[in-house]
Amino acid sequence: DTGIFLIDSAGMVISGNPAFANLFSIPESTLHTRNALKLIELVKEHRTEVADLIARCMEENHPLNLDLKLAGKPGSPTRWVSVVLSPIEGGRMQGVVNDVTQHKLAEIAAQELAMTDRLTNVGNLLGFERKLEDMIERSYVDPAYRFTLLMLDLDWFKQVNDTHGHKAGDEVLVQVARRLEQVVRRSDFVGRVGGDEFVVLLDATEEYGIIETIIRKVIAAVGQPIPIGGGVSVQVGASVGAAIFADPALRAEEVTRRADAAMYAAKQAGRNTFRIHGEADPA
Image 1 (cartoon, helix red, strand yellow):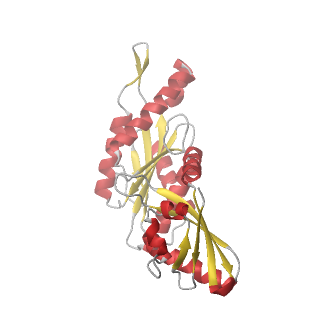
Image 2 (cartoon, rainbow, N blue to C red):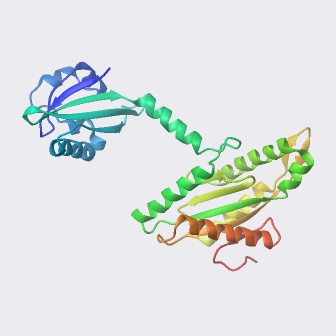
């Protein structure tokens, strides 16, 4: 049901219908108590945004809308509501509010699907690009924030495809994705960005020793025999290149280029090994 309410220029709720009270989980009796309720009190986590909406509506003198994500009560799910404010006579505003939770959930699911690799269920190229930009933006807010990009190219994968077929190759890709997820933390990002190319974004990680430890675990995990059915197992390797994001001035393209160059150097060094951009070759 659509909630309808009336507020004054100070944001005090003058009146509201039962649907309005229900959407914001307040007793209807509160709506009949003069000067008892302020709109921003109903959206505590969005006070600033709603106060700005009220001020702009009065100043610009035309309808404005805002979608709000509201935390549910304990045990209740998060909800989204759409609020439209329209100026009317006497310095007041009429509000219309609707629950748009289902629409938002569908929108989020569609976005996640668009950023997920269908075969392996890890991130795809778009998902990786978005995550990389998010991490770079975080560094603008916190200049001390660091992260590391790993680029992986599977070694001897073509032989698996040529010998056992593409179905076996797909199984290898799926198993590699699962192994990468097991090696890294939940806060890290795993993605498949090409045929047999994977990326890992190591959140808040910049120390060479830690990076090397993680990479060695990655190479060891990927290198374990992979069952492809019928009692048959295959083995692949991983050439890994790493680039540390240690300068907020770096662009996404440069971080990616550095990791890619390091991965190519690992390939040149004999495969199934790694290189970190800017570091001397490991012993």
